[in-house]
Image 1 (cartoon, rainbow, N blue to C red):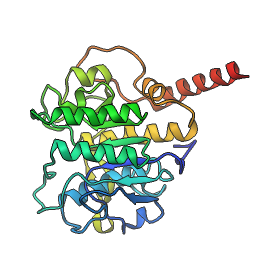
Image 2: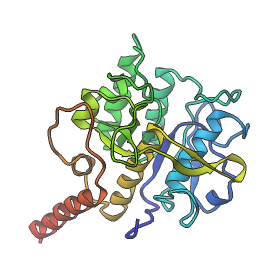
Image 3: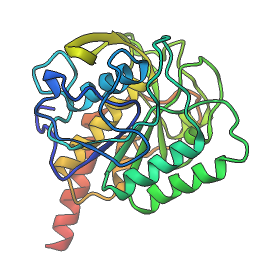
Image 4: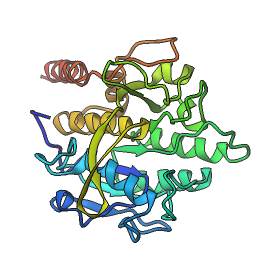
Amino acid sequence: MGLSSGSSDVAVALLDGPVDMSHPDLASASIRDVVGSQAGACMQLQSDACTHGTFVAGILAARRGSPAPAICPDCPLLVRPIFRESANNGHLPMTTPDQVAQAIVECVTAGAWVLNLSAAMDEPWTGAERRLEESLNYAARRGVLVVAAAGNQGTLGSSAITRHPWVIPVVAYDRQRRPMSQSNLGSSMGRHGLGAPGEAIESLGPGGRILTFGGTSFAAAFVTGAIALLWSVFRATSAADMRYAVTHGQRRTAVAPPLLDAWAAYEMVGAASGNRRRSNG
């Protein structure tokens, strides 16, 4: 974060709830709707979907100096809600595989470089997994990275999203650098996922509030933000090389992934970039 606040060329897509775009700490952010069945701006500030979407948006795009993490405020934020606003019951509304698949395709088409997805679930999605897999394959072909929350059911398993080899699933870690008990774990997370901060994260809430939450949705945003910053510095890096650097490029077998090491990824991408320049020179 000391090297970059992001680039206007590197768009981040938020597949989540809508966002309170009137929050003062988002006033300078470049936030755009991706056309879908629901507007990107909150209509019900008290809804769980609005609260969740605004909180994650604060991690990514709040102004630097705000209480939120504000990782990449100069990266455009493409908002494509997959959760509808409903009564406040302390839980995210449900979405469907078809809605997620459609949102992925729309965000890739809209020019996103990396997708932040908070819809990983461990329920079987029989009959719809193929469409979801096709949308993730489309993102891979277009060189768009997909970062997905591992889920907060505290189970050992995976979903159609976290199993996909192109997706980077993210497990929430506590302040003692251990996986949080609520976070899902599994072989797919261990093989190609990452851990990131997920305990007592402070970020933006609707209506100008500052809130504190925890979980894998918010851990995922740290990985997304790190990728956006790295791409802002090294824009010629391919999606495959960026993914390799961020996930440390090593084969793993445990059910819990290693923690994100953004600086190690920076050094790896920088070294590869320097080697390309020398070979081209």
